Length: 86
Image: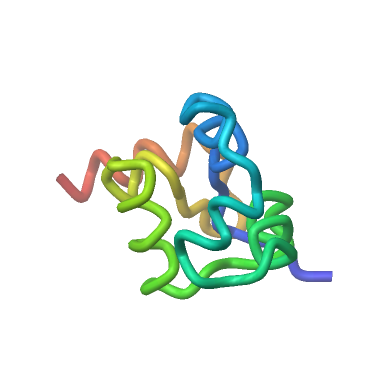
């Protein structure tokens, strides 16, 4: 089974944002609660449009919510790859 390469911290952000429920987030971005569950559990990667909508809800840049980890790299390698691109 292919591992999801997009990681996120939506669950933590929901609790920091007045303990927002999955349903409340789903309603604000126009998807089902099940979609939010799947994204949080990293079983599903959101579309770019949905990722931007989620970022708008939390009033954060996209990269503070989602991170991309290419296959064969751990998070420290992915971070150094991101820094090289700057």
